[in-house]
Image 1 (cartoon, rainbow, N blue to C red):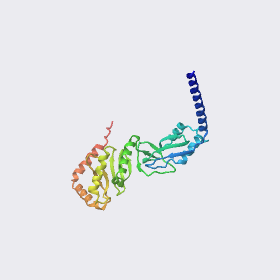
Image 2 (cartoon, helix red, strand yellow):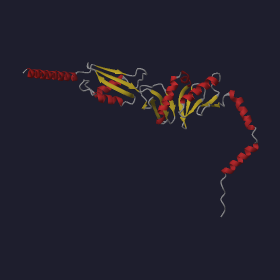
Image 3 (cartoon, rainbow, N blue to C red):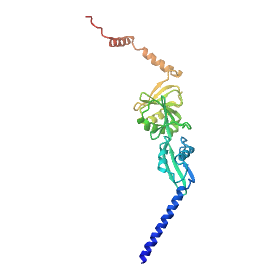
Image 4 (cartoon, one colour):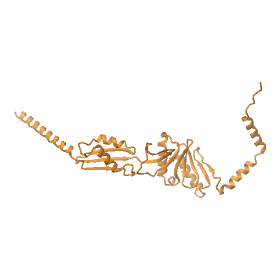
Length: 281
């Protein structure tokens, strides 16, 4: 008898608890969202997506703004579809507060190639420009392949992390599969070639600047090439007055070459390029 009474007591308790829980959930689902908290990037603030845009999106997905009509997985999926959003996490507290942790993409560089103009983040993901916000970052021009995005982002991150290189380099251009760094001083560019051995090339440039460019006029060179192994090749600026004596000396060396040699070379070229005569029938 006692066991039956105990079982009945447990049964009644479970039914009563289920009823109260169902009533509470029903009441909770009809309750409005008490508060919407949106957390954006803190370390590197970017403003491609603002709070108003996110709140408008929530209202579009849930016009009544009630807890029961809220579909968190769908809302997360919609937020992650925004090109400038790296990740989005949505969760609801028991007190009815909706929280959204949104991490926006941070551009490492901006590519301009013909009519194409877009940002690329550290992961090598490209995303479009914004009408409301322009993020300051390195400008890259030329036909850059998607497979090079990550290496290029790594190069620019290293440049930005060093006060020395950040001062010198203001842009990057790519021509005929060769990269060049554009400088803030003088008219010269720094030729990198490919994106391999970047640390070695950058350290080589820093050593060259420290030893040769500290007291030299920045207009002296038109190009400093780092693409060759274990050497730095410089090209003098022909329009810089200080280079006249060097260029004149080289010209005099050329004048010492015998004229007969030049004639032989010219004759050889003429023979090679002359078309064969057709024989008469």
